[in-house]
Image (cartoon, rainbow, N blue to C red; front, top):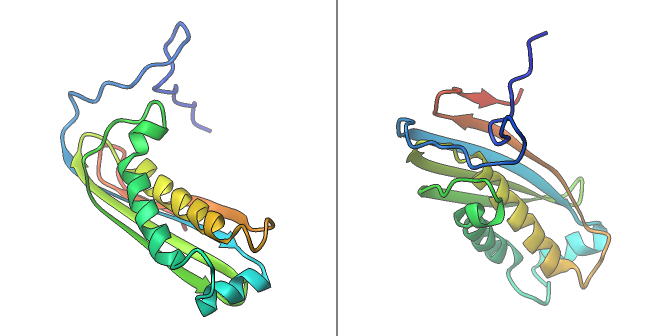
Length: 161
């Protein structure tokens, strides 16, 4: 078993700070995150038929996810402001589970990664699906939000198995 690394945001004498990345080399960075919104049968049917009163749920959720990625540093207190170069948010229906699967990718060139941007994109897109469908059911569940891959930077690549 290896010894745990100290948390970079916590000072030795207590308190928190934003990590200084000014001496880090700019490299191409990418991250992919996924999540699910479990709707239930009635909501799934309405979404798949395109009869949700608030409109085009997928398009609105895509835009919301992109905006969320761009605003990550204002939402997560110790995140760096990242110059996001690209964000993609894709939503698809899963008929077997009566769910929406969400996949977001974020790309940048800079001294720190875009994992948080991808995760925020998925989460905001999922919350938007919830918001647009909540009048049909309050039993909608957001689940399985996770980082599935990241590339670039000193820590190297990461992929879930």
